[in-house]
Image (cartoon, rainbow, N blue to C red; front, side):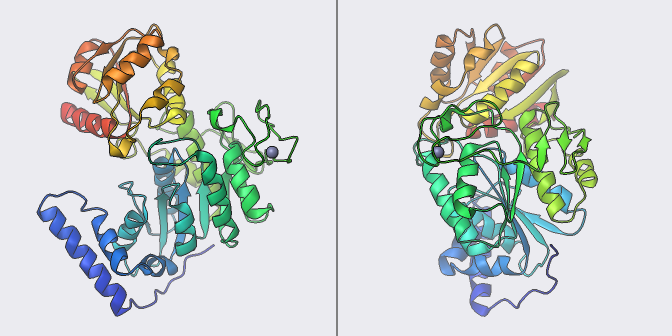
Length: 424
Ligand SMILES: [Zn+2]
């Protein structure tokens, strides 16, 4: 797959829409109203909805979607593909159509590669309008209970969109039954699909077969539905049990990531499979991954008064399960942050699905708008903890030890700013 080299001329209508969008973005920044990142895209798409298709038509386009790991996988893939040519991306994480348009507008007329993370709800619209060469499907699990519908409804939407996009090559997680069901229903064939065994520790959203609704026992790696025949596909790429990458030839390679945790390694294998498809050899891709130390603050590691402090993002039960594995494998204190603002989802009842019992016996403190919700959850999990007003107080409460800070989205943003200031 090679990039086209000549862009079609921008029509006057598209040009005017982009001009208006950029002007709105500049005005927003000037007035310090925020939204400067996505506003150009919002305004331009309001004036010219077909613009997003035009902006992506002359590019080699890769979309990355799923509930968790989109930003990290997008970053890994962007760095790998940058080895063979220019790449644009929505590195700010703005993953609705407005954010995708804004990222492409920043390089309007470019003909290189675009690697864009896409909200899982928006993916069907993005597939239909942007006609990507490759889509990377990481996982599906429940998220933001007030905003996002029942996760099984995504399976049907993804399947319909894949059926209507027969030319896009799919790189998909063979271990996630919901992803497999969507690809199975959307393709009914292995042609144009690269399966990756990237793991799926969170299985509570697949207690019934996502294809037929039959009761099944989802145990082990080789799962199958006796009723409808949905079965785990044979993967060509794998994340090995020791955290290594196993490529389609069976060769095993250490990933050597600076990013910690199983989820990072899984994202790296997904990115390596996509990069290979797009012309970057696996050895070079892995080497490029090793230089990434954080992804817009995810996994940020700072020294605060001689203490090692690391920041982790977890937004939903599946994400927290991965982060808990990281927290329990590390020593030191744990500072948990919880908000329930619009960007987080305003219903934090998912807390009760997360096995915080794993933190028993650890030194824990809690901050955030909804710290008392977290405190009640920890109380019933029998995890002793302090409730603190902010990140600085949390670090003080955990004096004399390294600290992992784990927070959901807006609490993470607050913690990122606090840690960067404290480390400065
Ligand atoms: Zn079934």
